[in-house]
Amino acid sequence: MRTVNHDRNSFAKTNIDSIHHRISILRQLLPKVNTVAEICCGDCKRQYELYRKELGDISYRGLDIDPQMIKKNKANQIDCICGNALDAQVMKNFLHADVIFFGPPLSDHCDGHTLLQFNEVNPSFLDFLRLMYVDLKYDGLINCICPRSTSLGDITWLYNEITGLDKEVKVPLIHYSHSNRTGNDEIHETRLKYIEVWFSKKHENNWEILKLGETDSPSLGTQE
Image (tube, rainbow, N blue to C red):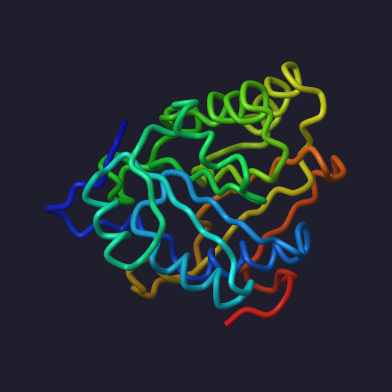
């Protein structure tokens, strides 16, 4: 498993625009969300604060394998567990969540510079979906936060693999998240940051494509 190199200025934190995008999409897919979980959460102070500000007094719980990250999050009064995302006993603590954001490290050393390909990401998206939907019978939303190099072929492969194990799993929405800033708020030209595939057993299999943050693209809700 990859963890943050704490001796470097990591660019692995989620940028504020992508968090606002997720909030907008949640308002569309799950207007009455009460519980949010973030797996491989890293430094999740910004997410925690924005979700609670924009979605109400929700329950939030994170998980990360890095003890230093757990200590940092707990110092900010965030409910956070140290453990492996593929450990069934650990993940039973998250079955109550309405939505799970699964954001494994997408670059070597979590520095944002040497990006991984879809099939290089560890823990893998298929392994996580299999654990949650098939083994643990989770019935909520899962947002798989994939590297920006992810292709529709990769997504189709992932969908075919998981529906081969559980035909109830669907893809209501695929989001191409764009932003003009890093997780440390450094400004640059607008770039594709993540490709986020939303899985669900309760929504239609629409494969709706959104490109929030892209120049002149339609947006959902109000963003700051």
